[in-house]
Image 1 (cartoon, helix red, strand yellow):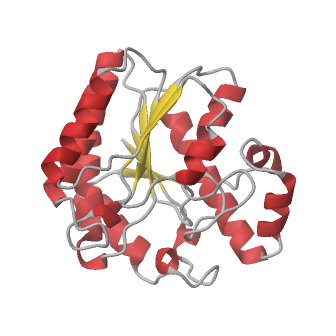
Image 2 (spheres, helix red, strand yellow):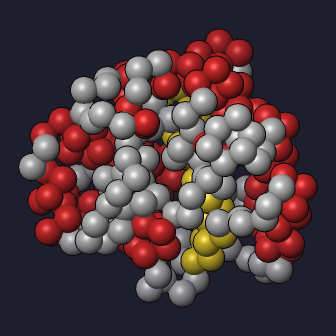
Length: 253
């Protein structure tokens, strides 16, 4: 399993929000590299053509007015693309990237997001003729409205944002949903660790993140190809963030 990360993601000067706080990326990468022992690969910035797969010229131009944000958001989108390309070759991958993207719609964005990382990654694979269908699991504490908007015209993409009230029902909702899926070419996960019991979602445990990762692993095995990738969205309780991401990756790998 590969971890996609760039040292520039440690920068905090591109924004002043919950996703850009100091130490957030460091605690994740420490857990993944020092405890998990995963190999790290570095992405490049997404091109303007890549961004335009998911966004209007107006929206791209609005982000570009802030040079630091645009550079970081383009690198984040590039990280998502690289992660999906690794996954297509049947090696699971996790993108430790920021800013997040699941609140970035075609023409606007909010919630710490700039560009729709998941949408760009999947649309890039489709543009290259590699996939025709996909499943996206978004377990962030907030619905990924941007991802839904960007992928809304692609009828062979299914997106699940679980809404169950407790962790057991939450896991059961995921299991029931994927049980009815006959086939998809790839699985993408918007991994929002703010659904953690000590974070704003106040729902999932560290072990639950492991179980979600394992569910996606088993699901892609049933699909017969094991193509799966995930990318960081939310997650703001820094004392446990690293171990939660590691638990998910251990189930996912």
